[in-house]
Image (cartoon, rainbow, N blue to C red; front, side, top):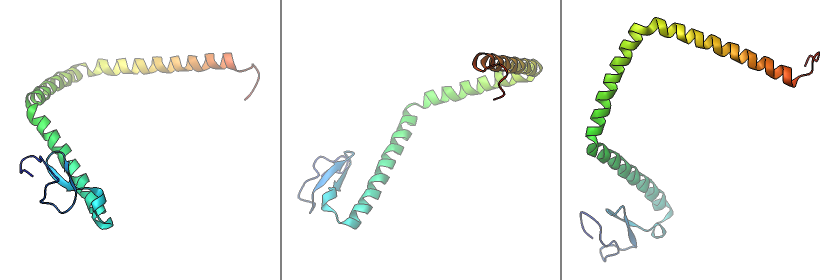
Length: 126
């Protein structure tokens, strides 16, 4: 066994069969454990997998900090431009939105009328 990375988990230092986990830990095989130890083992494995995923995420952020900085700065710039657009064009935006809603309602009404004319018999109440 080594301290930085595991090279051999089945050395004479352990009294049971082990295997390499993530290349960093020597863990006992599942068959070598009792029932109680198996439940503890499952919990331990899930914690190790979570920690490994977390460290992977943090490492990715550390490697790509320039990209995150560019995204944050460009987002703030676009947010400022959008805020000014909303401030100076709010009246126009409200009128355009009302007109679009009116046209959608008229279009949906025509669609329902056309569907009813094509699929239902005249004079039938159901």
